[in-house]
Length: 201
Image 1 (tube, rainbow, N blue to C red):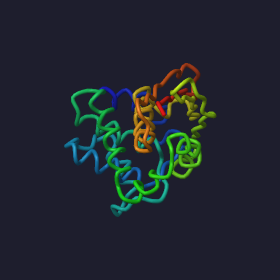
Image 2: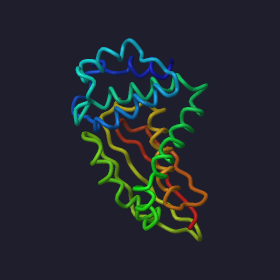
Image 3: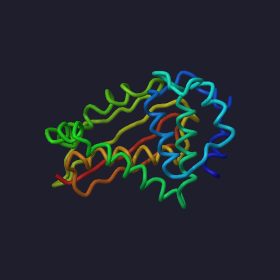
Image 4: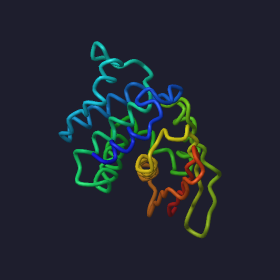
């Protein structure tokens, strides 16, 4: 429970913090399904805000991202440790990309092309934060680039920022990357997390 406890304590205005940072409602629905699947009961500090957002059990089109983050960390309670939760994030995203609609799309996209559109995809699902991926470079058989996630300071914990690395890795792997690595390089500047991405191909 430490990851969720630490996150909730860090929020300046609790689950009403950072109202300009929002995520699509279906993303929250998926997090709630995940928490139920892994047997993680909803934390009593999170449940009232969910009831307020979903008074009739239906999620609006946009919801506060802090609530989504809290539910995701609530699902963490269903795993033995951070590493298991991070691996499950990767597996869950990889499973999504195996669905027929995504599989057909990824057949015609290289990892390079896929991440060139990462900013647009991020903005399609989130408001109030931005993911910027630099131009890919080559070093022998390895392609590499950096990406920067710009967000309100405090919106994401270090664990969640690492989780984003795992979901990015799942995306490029689904597009055919070999020997991929996505690492959180730097988060020392508040509100800016820098990633290094590489793969062979």
